[in-house]
Length: 562
Image 1 (cartoon, helix red, strand yellow):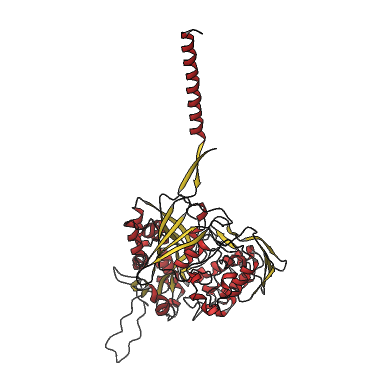
Image 2 (cartoon, one colour):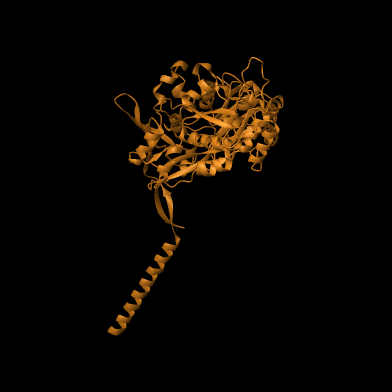
């Protein structure tokens, strides 16, 4: 081969090599994908301080509940898309009479110390819940239930009465029996395991730090390498604790933390302008309503209650006062519930109809800026009277919590009712005074407040007449025999479809009675750094449900070819 031929051959070969390399590069670029990888850590602010990171007690403290939801797992778990699904439970078999649930535990389920999760652990946990000596706030759901071990991996629950929602209650984290059984019930709240827990959830306890006063300042969780489910990707989560929402938000602004577990309404604007975080919103079953105290003579009048309901523009309250922080609520059933009916319109915004109804009922029309009078008939004049007593104005006091959210809504209601000629005086109380000093004593006329329901609600606790008084949640002492029957029948329903039908009938009748004006359902807001890839849950039951899909969160990525 001549020298020119050799040069030509070498050049051609180089061209071929470069072409192959180029085509390979194009192929790799076209087929390269990024996948979640293990690694990274996140620092998040929580409100409050951990005390009992224990499934028996954690529900009473949000900080405990957040940590317990990551450290422990239950037989069943909540999924925002699928609802209640199996977790530690491998299978759930319901007997024909709907009184017995046979639950098989996953063979590969382990606690973070490597010990297998067995039937004895489940029996111990639910027996402790039932034992009054443990004083668990959850005991009421399990008093009439028998739990027993069938074999090492199988548990049998036996009910006295059928309960369609029973499996929904089995989300409680399971305690390791071998670590807890030797601790006397009365000493359980004092045990070190409450702050150094062993559970079967996706994360495990690593360490905590305290300040000079003995308060926990930070709490670190690490990946549970024994976790039986989808492995978590974020290596560590560090929680720091703050006394209130403002200080937690300030810590985010000062970069002392990267995220905040809850962003209060009044701080959301600041966080939305923080370019280092994403503010996520998820609906939560927290409904705000304007409640009527019918011990007030005027509020016994259904015409007045209906007129007030018709004069309140809920769409305006949500769109202009609350923005993306709420959705309109037309009844006591929240979105996310199987009984929720998106077509249910409730009481329409009809201020003209409200004015006409008050006119027809004899309440004097307002003149100019003055208020309506209670009656257009003056009391009979007595001989001893120098003049006829002045006819009182149609006015009420609206009591609410002293927060920016409720104050804004209260002011909007006041403005709208003013157009109807009804005067409103706003009275605020601290949140910690609301239950004991306002609700328990019925010391209000109109009450603007929120209450929590559930994704599959049992409105019995809020509207059945038996729930009036101490320990009950029937805020306005509402009594209606037809409502009581619907609520009892719904509880006894044999199918979810029947239960939902009865619940919708309850909602329709209740709204017509106007014991309250249902206003809006809240959105729960939390902030996480942009470095975390996550999809906010489409629905929450409780605040800690924001971690329901924590195993899908990731920071690090790896590249591969598809």
